[in-house]
Length: 393
Image (cartoon, helix red, strand yellow):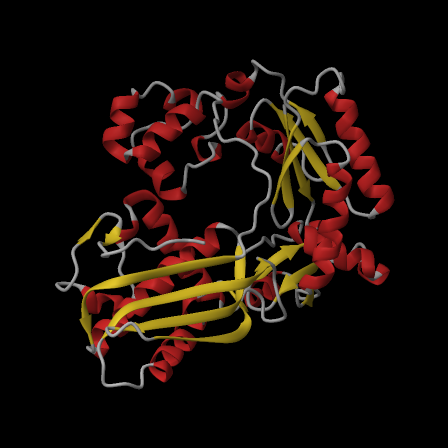
């Protein structure tokens, strides 16, 4: 069985715990948009992701605080340490975790009792409430938790997955976004039960791989395993050019493309970068490199200027370049800072681009100066075809 552990209204709850004067009051953490709001704020119509100016119109007495990532990280570490007392395998995120208890039935014959124990220890030792959902796979455990938030506990028995899903509105099926659900509502498909009647061939024809995944999820199936947390020491993207060049537009475009690919990998791991290293190699095999530190970020626009600057500072000889690379390192787990999630609009833009690429391939969207490579390099659904692969170390 898989446990989904969800910390209720995490950032706002931490602030209320640290300052008793905030308890019972509507609290939001953010600076531009709401990253987390208390249940008192949610009762007034507020929600995560809502612009703060809109939230303050709905709730003039809202207490707005900026995120303090180091404090939240300490609370997260304490909660996950409690969970690791029991879980053989655990995959953690900012305010939630999946714990895999497969094969532990002899050790824990009553999973509900284990869930109660974890919730009690978190409350007693950390002071926060967590909701625990238990089911046969990741997807169903998260559905179980969502159905009893906040401060709840629920187990969906093995074999009851389909019965749980059938009456749900189509929008509640994991992976079913607003546009996709609207498409099916236009077809008069309103529940998961009705969605299940659509043949998989039709879904694949309409949505590709997403259609096949939704077909499985509508039947309560989720083959994703709980993976132990692994943070790489660095993420690199580099390539040898098809032909040595001194063309500034081409080199700028290639650097933009390498940064774009490296930052996408960074976001997929839920990380932010603090150190950038750029390397160049001349056609006579002389190599130069330079590093720079920046404020932790997951946004291309805050990394690319530093990478371009270092490239042109390094490129001082009248010799063509044959190799270019960028390395990201010194990572931090994605968490809010004082200037919440850097620029909110840029963050949402890159999240949208990542979703498009997840569905249609990396070549579906070409960003910024990388457009200079059109006509110079072949491109397909995976992006530009480089002479040597972009490697992650």
